[in-house]
Length: 90
Image 1 (tube, helix red, strand yellow):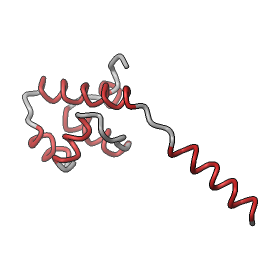
Image 2: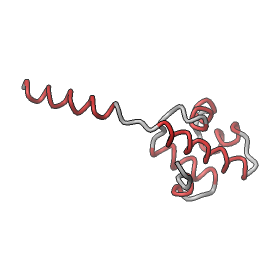
Image 3: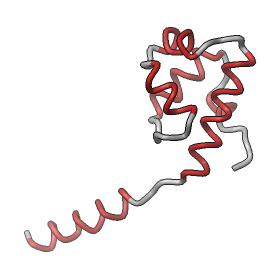
Image 4: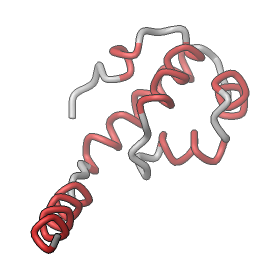
């Protein structure tokens, strides 16, 4: 039991340290660029994607590590394939 607890703690600690701020900012910049190219406001993107506007703002600023479901919703709302959201230099 003690060994399992130790392994869980080590695994959890490793996972929580994974974060690439440069990548998150580049992803956010790409979302903003695509949104503006479609002539959409953050409010409109929020409405179409069903993602709260406050989260759209934080994604575009690179403040949060958004999930796969949000990436899917954003790509559908922007009318692009998900891979287009990741078509940037980081």
